[in-house]
Length: 349
Image (tube, rainbow, N blue to C red):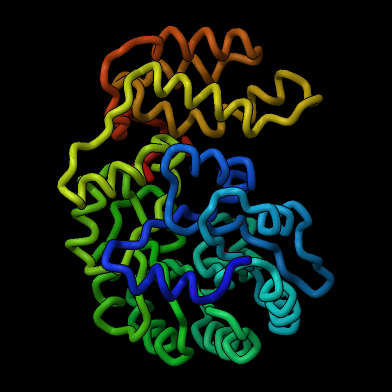
């Protein structure tokens, strides 16, 4: 059974806390379990639970919490803007084996922010104030927030910081881009440093942590208590271990091509559902391979080929043709050029 003390113990430890970011339709129980096999983070976040007037907590997320096989604590994340519904859901969640309840103030998906949820709430600081106050009063276990630095203008962050400080948060995670920047811009780490200096609670840095060296740089630039990593961990499941090794001054593990190929095979087995048609399984894998592929070849040929297959045999034939070797693969993203409309355009992660 998870307890609130587990989060406090992590935050009191001498090492930076490493967390797996919540990624919708990615960080389910199967993916979290797979990450744990490669070293994994210290702390996991669930996919967000959609909260509204008639919502009930998604069964698969509740199951992921109850059947957490990672050996590490888990945080339940909510997204929504209706205070009674958020309170109702939070009171339910705090009786599950979670170490904290998190409110999402950063999701940049238009379908979310147009409903004034996730990052859309950052347009209304007074509403954020009211929601945080109501939730802090209702939640008896640690309460955390994940935010961006503004909706379309980071200058609002100066207005948000006193609100975060006011409500006795146990942890604030800052993705240092605005909502409208999505993942396409550079990350403005100076705003995370501002939060570290201004807030009484620990601050976690999020955004574009793609290697052990980058992790050390972000910690140095921000003074953050830890790092939350999302897409970089999809591409490189060894990343959390590599960061620990780098910070301890130990030799870093570098996978070979066949290690990466083995990871892709394990990922396929973990996240694909028996009985679902083969083409749908391959399409699902492309979501993950979009990120893995950034670290495979500088020309983007792997991504070009993998996006055009529909059969399992063809999928693995391409993976083997690029990865069935014993050469080191750092898995840092290559600066591959994409069209502006491409999901991966701009700064990677």
